[in-house]
Length: 276
Image 1: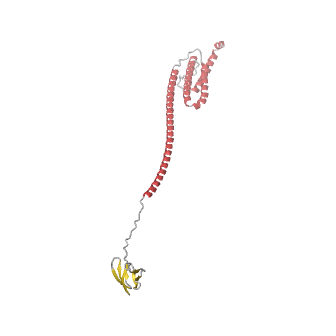
Image 2: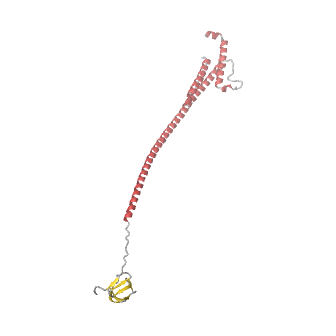
């Protein structure tokens, strides 16, 4: 195979040109910025010069590798946040990786030394550091937020327990108040009964009427139609039929034979016992 390649330089040149066109078409599909023309001396000039084509291919391959590395870093960064999208992204990224890696293997030539890819690792390391710092900061903030949420939940639990204890105390106080109110009502009733018992009884004073002692009359002397009477207090009066005697009424009959005087009140005036 090596002899055939050395004996046929035309075939090698044709293969190089074909590979360059294939690589350029793939790189144009990956990076559309290289599709814009830059004048007459464009870097995608399809001249059959072998050294120029190899350097262009190397550079395009390195650019494609850098883009793929950046895409991988961005994918890793987004993988922390969008966990639900990890499966479609993993299925799509390796496909691009294989195509991008297979193209340089077809075009690579052992003649030219590859340029140093020094700038890309520095960029990737810096970006990775920044992303890691951001991720660490966000993790710290998440931890602080979780601790705050836990503290707030603990406070809410303590408040709920305090509220339940206060509700129990309030119910107990209501029960004690109801008991005290019932006791006060019973005591008030007892006090009312005691007040009724302790009230002084109203004593009705009987008005004693002083009755004047009645004057008793006795016959001192009597004749038909007239009589002389002497009172118990020593006074004397003369009466006849029809005369009014205080306490006895009107004189109806004077009987000298029996020695009595009959009055309208039914009282009879007689001689005194001393006269008998």
